[in-house]
Length: 270
Image 1 (cartoon, rainbow, N blue to C red):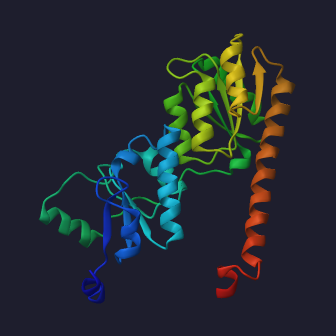
Image 2 (image 1 turned 30 degrees about the horizontal axis):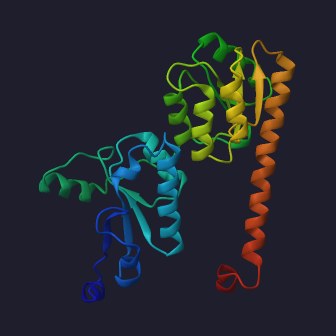
C-alpha cells in the first residue's frame, strides 16, 4: 500500500463501520478516504440514530484529515443531509446506475458531476410548517409572510424531512395529529437530526401524555394551541427565529475565538 501511494495512487477504505473495517486500519494503513457504508446512509435523513452514526463517522474523518465518501445515495434528501454535514463525495443511483465501460468513459470526458447545492435560504428567516390540513398551511403561510418570513410547507413528516435535508430552516411548526408520525414524534426525530432547530408543536387536541413526554425529552421549544390568535402566533415565531439566530451567532463567535487562541493549530498555520 505504501508503494502504491508513492506511485500517486489514492486509496479508500471501503464499507467503513461494518465487517472487517476497523479503527486500527486508519492508523496502520495510508488511506486517503473512508467510504461510509450504505447501511448508515439509507435512513440518514429520516432517522435520528442513522444521522448520529453518519455524523460521528464524518466528524472522525474530518478530524483525521481524511476525505469521506457516502455509498448508496439514492435520493435528494440523503444527498442534502450529507452535504450539510460536510461529506466530500457520494456514490449511488442518484448520480447513475451501473454503466458499461464505454458509458463510463463518456462520463469522464464530459466531466459529469452533480449540480451544485441550491435551494438554501437564510435559516434565521425560514419557517417550515408541517400539517395535513391545506387550509391550515395556507393560513399560516399568509400570516407569517407579513413579517418577511420564508415559509415552507409540508403535509406530512416525510415531506418535512425532505425540506429539512435540502434547505436551512430556523423554526419548525408541526401539527400534533397527522397521519403516520405524530407531530411530537416528528419533532423528536428532528431534534436528533437537526439539534439547532427551534421546534414548536401546534395542536387542537389534548394529548397530554405525548406532549409531556416530548417536553421532557427536550424535543419542543413551545406548545401552541389551535385555534390560534394571529398576533400570538406571529410573536412566538418571531421570538423563536431570534432565539435561533442568537444561538448561531454565539456559535460563530465561539468558533472565531477558538481559531484565535495561541495554542490553536489553525492560528499557528495562519
